[in-house]
Image 1 (cartoon, rainbow, N blue to C red):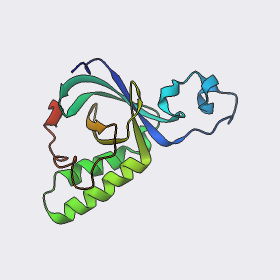
Image 2: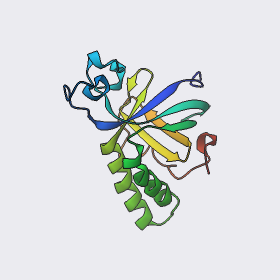
Image 3: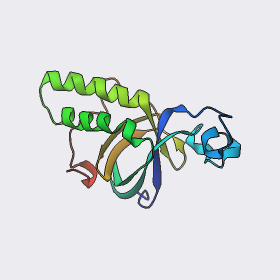
Image 4: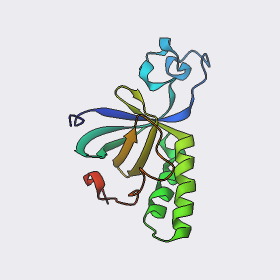
Length: 153
């Protein structure tokens, strides 16, 4: 599908405050040198270099950014809950996934995506995404499928 070799970005949902000092990277504006497609320069959580596309999943090497430590436990909790198969796990997984969606943004080479389901474990990340918000019922039905996209375990 042509995704291999692309770099996708994981950024904090809250943009960096503009004009917060002399360091261009801290400003998050067009003059900072940050790619304007990143939607305001949220905290650098990491980058994913895509090395496998297995529709609808993309997967690749994850390189943690300086802000990854702030969300690392959130992603670990999400994966642990995704592995459970009872209703209690599902409910907690949904709440954790909603927290991820509020906390981070996934940015394609063309700009931020509207919806995503992102897993990060160690130096691997795998995700599915959409240009439109996911349905309430669907599009996340196999969130626990760690083998999807070839990036499990």
